[in-house]
Length: 377
Image (cartoon, rainbow, N blue to C red):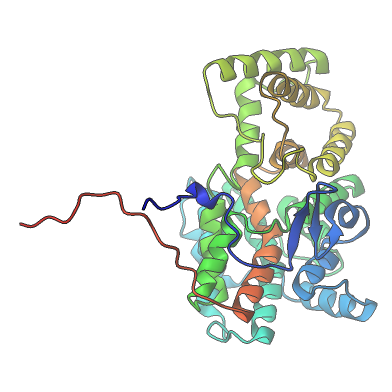
């Protein structure tokens, strides 16, 4: 009898989760039951993190307690900074993020404590400190010094402060906050499932997150937002160009790329059949950045690629498509886009790690062997 193979585990339901789901009726991504577009419109990223970890929106007291905790754990551990400094400036920033989390885990006093209380503490600390990892890595690549965190700023304000050394305008802060909320969680995606597989072996939280970062690095997963910007750069970005001219060039580029059967990142999603429900909210954030910085030519490139892909393949953008140019306009280097994804997804990963540990079974699928029959020397 031939085994049924589900390549890529497509269509396989591996377990239950209460963290998130895509509601097919409304085509909405739900965090603990709440549509993510509503959360992005109304809540801080800190509140969304607490929702993902705890299952409910925080009370005022719970929110304040977490804000105090998070702001007191933002500084980069000197041991982590030393480890980062040992890495070459031309390595990928995802390698830096992966290494930093591993060093944090190796030095954590609760590393081998998998009680719910210890796991939540480690998750909150990782949430708080990872912006410093991303910010310092971008700055060191530019030959700039570390910027210390500020406790008078919220998560998004402080992230931008540590990266650029100046307070960001309100419009930029809000667009960044929206991106963090939208990237925070997405059910059993490749990196989250990786984290759950590692957790199922009873490995520690930092090992699971380190493995998840490895999965996220690939261009078919988290690296797509970076790949989108590389596409824009290949087409050519000219701030003096009109939106219409940029759109025409982008459309012609896409038509040629599709004719050559090239893989163009930022389009399509295995889960969504009617378009990624997060895109409209992220597109609004991109629109705000384009208007703020007066960069209509970027929106022209966006429109031209989207139009050509839609006409040729009827494939719609995913979240990475508007996120890439949004981060570009904020001033992040292209290679830093996926580490920003880590900063957001730490919340979802650690929520799933806790869920896996609470009702654990070792994840160990079978395989269908198709090698040589038994043979002997």
